[in-house]
Length: 80
Image 1 (cartoon, rainbow, N blue to C red):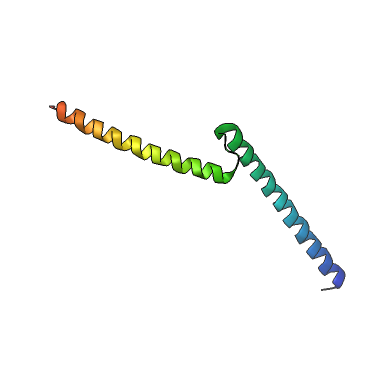
Image 2: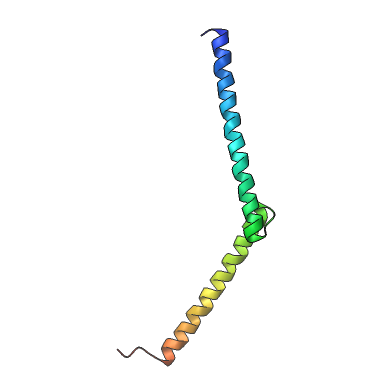
């Protein structure tokens, strides 16, 4: 392969990589904007922390619901 052809090939690869990097940067920016507008998070790390907090809260609420359901079923058993 001639030097000029090799140069053109490398240049195309660099341009393709740059386009992919630009698309990825744009996608990241959109995600960060959505996190801010919809969830009031200023970073991905903050969103991950919020997810952990909400997951723990969900687990607590589910456990409380299960206890309440068991108490209800004990008090009013299904007689069908």
